[in-house]
Image (cartoon, rainbow over all chains, first blue to last red; front, top):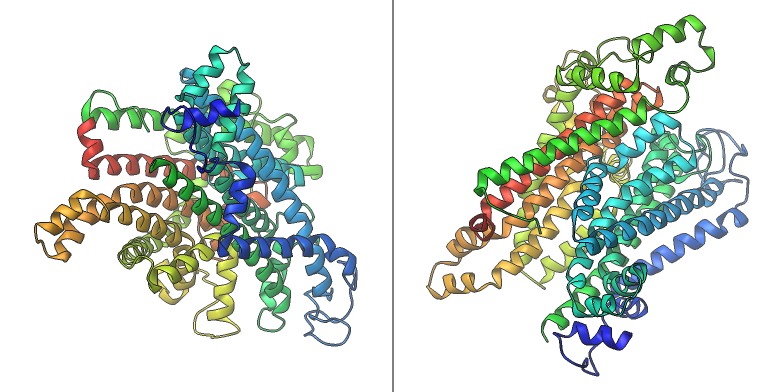
Length: 304
Length: 324
């Protein structure tokens, strides 16, 4: 099957040139992207912060809600980074505060990715009224800025974790679907799809076995972009006082609670800011690295 | 990408307008369904455990909950069209009186940010394209990439740290607008919120501008203009720039619409009294009429901006215009 695929891609030729890279192969695209410094730096940043979020709670000197001293005391004594507005240990809360954001962002992005890819591919493959109906539906969701849809959901149901995850996933779906449809549209017209149809391959296998592998490049770029936004919106909601646990250790919550005391005890706000900034920059850099690599592959293909 | 059929430019505009209206109607159904037709009793949800039967009944009547769902939707929608957005549950006054002044404040914020960020980002993008692979291009590319990834509230708090508290203390850290005064009465207070929004938007526009400009500079007609011996200035301003701006309009419109969402966080950080902080307030207080009104308003702004972007793109791109 993969031989047919290769042949269809190279301008209707019979076989692909031996040295031509297999385009948009999941693993090869990531390895190629990792040759760029920006991707490596991004991966290192994300890796370090994910590690911090995972092992943080195990190495934290105190629990996240244990008062250890005077409120807003500066670093020193038993609190390495000082205490926050309630006298809780900043370092401990910082070490606990990444996990919730990351878990929610990963789940929301994953759901949005799966549903969005399915809708986008179905729309691209349908080539009829279903395509229009699906994409107009996506337009409706896109008419809400991401944070606003999340705010409406929280206003109606409450700031439970699942509400936030579903709202972020819902805003991720149309953006992924657009990219998936856009990338799949030219592929749908290729010979190997017609070939698969003629061979009687079931529709779902054409969608996910034939279309999907040929849209992975743009999808991975969009997925890392969506991940960046999901982290940003989830942290922003916590910053607006709408975290699942209003007093829990959460980087967004920490910034909100400690920004008033910035000039007295900056660490309570500065540490989570650095963490969120490095995390989103990391996912952004990875996305850009993949985008550049995918564009490079595109260029070498169109130059055949 | 879009199927352009007969009718010329007016036909295209009419079709896009129709589509925009369809989208808005669907948005209104979603907003209405999400906030009114929920399972359970909205009156109970709004009033909480302290509700008495009398106050519940009064609120149900006020929200028209005693009528069928379709009638509720219709009375809400027709009120919306006549500018009657209902009453705020928290402030006990009409939503329009509550939001009117805040709308002006937010519009000032968005307008100033747009006026600063669009020319700035177009200039950065063009300059980076002209100096491709040189030092300005590489530095600005990495810097814009990093800034684009940052959530606005992180940018905002970092700006407060840098310019209003710890490092330099030259600007106010909060931008409260006292009742009765206008946002432009206190210019220094506007700087940080606007700067945050500029930083949130400029990277995207600058990056797409650079990519678009590079493509145009490599085109045959720019080479032709150069070979004709036109001065470089004319080549760039008359031949390259107008063609490079086409794709940028879409991104500018998307980012202006994005600003409508971004102001929620930015206004909250700086305690700026606009529709963004009103939305945050309304969400925290379960003030659903205000949430509904703001959701419709922001969605409408988004649809209109997208429409304008599509029309502008068609107008500045001869290739698309003549295909109509």
